[in-house]
Amino acid sequence: MDVMPQQDPESRRTPGPSPHDRRARSAAAHDTTPGHEPAATTGGEPVATPNEDPSVLPAEGATAVPPPPTTLRTTLRRAAFGAVAAGVLLAGALVAVPDRGRDAAKEPGPVERAEAAATAGSPASLSDLTALIGDRQQWVESHPQDAPSWATLGSAYVEWGRRSADAAYYGRAEEALKRSLAAQPGERGNGEAWVGMAALANARQDFLAAKRWGETVRKQEPRTWRVYPVLIDAYTGLGDRKAATEATEKFGELRKGVPALARTADLYRDQGWREDALATAREAADRATTPAEKAEALHRLGELAWERGEPEEAVAQFDAALRTDSGHHASLAGKARALAALDRTDEALAAYQSVLTKLPRPLYALELGELYASLGLDGDARSQYAELEKMLAQSRAAGVDESVLRARYESEHGDPAVAVELLRAQWKKQHRSAAVADALGWALHRAGQSEEGLKYARQAVDTGVRNASYAYHLGVIERQLGEHGAARRHLEEALRTNPAFSPLDAPKAREALEALGEPPPGGPGATAR
Image (cartoon, one colour):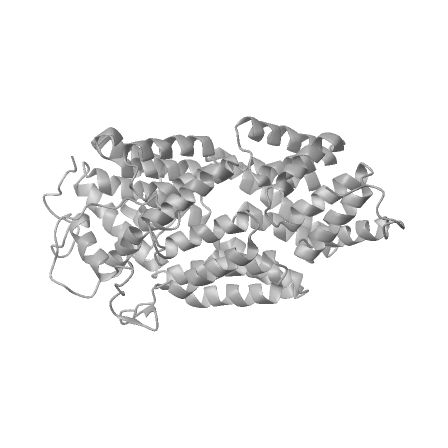
């Protein structure tokens, strides 16, 4: 049974509603179900309150997020920043706090907007997210037995860790979620905390644990939509395409609107249905009603354009996402990638350097290092790879499994045997996605085991996803094994899919294709699969 807060935190300047009370008001003000338009919007975009830009973080102060604190009490005072985003951008990790009443109608503030976004399963702006986390931190200090608010806070830490690329928050997330479960066990109705634990496991790339948490919730509450996004992520990480498809379809049945469209577009992309993915992603962008939701949808369109080999369109979509929400740093990384493909090298380098100060994800560090290498800037590349190794060590210390990315680095720039060892361990853990299959196949090839690598490389391509790197890796392995017809086909497919898929590998694909030459009269000597 939920614990009803008896009084507001003493730190509040004026008495106000509990987190539970506000949710009813904010959900009503931001109802995104068909037939109910959000209040106070213009042209589909919400009207910002005076002197407030919902896409920009507040200045350093009471609602801003300072560096990670060292104690749980200080953490709870400062880290509520992630609460809404956890359920929003992790698509279901944030707790939907039960309604407890309704205040007099008024324009929703940042906390209410963030709660409404979470209720809808949509992204919240960073400033709204910051406000809600600060509010929830204060609340749990005075109400330590409020299980839903602890679950919200724990989920928030997960999301803030993801959005800031600061894995240190995941440990704090686990502690807060455990506090929630101690106050109210999952078996007694605290499925929200279990969903948070699933999201945390996904963030740490422990997909089997995420699956177990998620399936526990689904067994107890099969009609709750919030569990399906974390299950989709878990099944995708495990390479269980059938289960991921079923979970996506169930999510769409239970939760209509932009969140379901976004997940469906991702499903279509992973199945290689490009036109369907594009049409669905466009519909999601057209129907998005908040800047944060719109930016996420535009980012998806940018990624799809990039994968189709349309870097100019990708830059346009990423720019649109950044204009909509300047805090959507992943779009800056996407823009950097596309700028490099357009030979706008100085701009690409500047964009990568900028995003690494805002969102220091290891993937971006690897991409920047490879861009340096493609330009002959070997010293800069080595320095960047050294930074990458530091990032990977920090992630590992925080319990995040970055084995696949580390293996990609080792295969190309380090020790392929280490990559093989890492990826065999992933396969043993049932992490058998297309990405893992491709990485393992390539690592085996680089380690001199091309025959075994061929099996995994084919498995990655056979999933249907249109990925130029997968086709390139398969083509190179086939060429090594003398399967020239199949090699020619897959190298051509890689360059047709995305002619500039990698600053290092795209030129190598062209060289390999040229070395193969035209097929002999009467057809290729080896029949392509």
